[in-house]
Structures are given as C-alpha cells and as structure tokens.
Image (cartoon, rainbow, N blue to C red; front, side, top):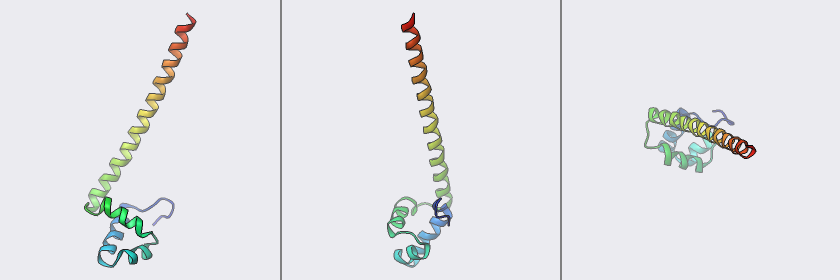
Length: 91
C-alpha cells in the first residue's frame, strides 16, 4: 500500500474481496481506508475482474493523456490565431 499514491488494482480487488468475506468495517480497518472508499470502489470495480480493472486504469491514463494533448493543441491554435489576427491588423 502506498499512502500518497493510492492503491493498486490488485490491492483494491484484495480489499473488496476482504469486504465481501468479512465486513466493510473490518476491511476498512485492516487496510486503513474509509468505508466510503470501499463503497465507491465497489460501485466502480466490484463487477470487474482484476484484469478488467487493470485495463480500465490503462484506459483512464490514456484518456487523460489524450485530453492533455487536445488541450495543448487548442492552446497552440488559439495562440496562432491571435498572432495571425495581430499580423493582419498591422498590414
């Protein structure tokens, strides 16, 4: 467990399995997380296998990368448009 980075997919699946077999409160105490975190993870990951959880995380990372790339390109377009507009006004 890495407190600052969060939990890996395997750790989340392990916590959810423990919550299923023991109790949410017991798993929360054992892994030092809130019960609310477990309920949120259940909502998102409980129907998925560990392999599907890993794939979902990979897709989330790729999505974030593409969103950043799109924002960067939009900023470049805005900058170039402003420069072009400025150049056209000087003529």
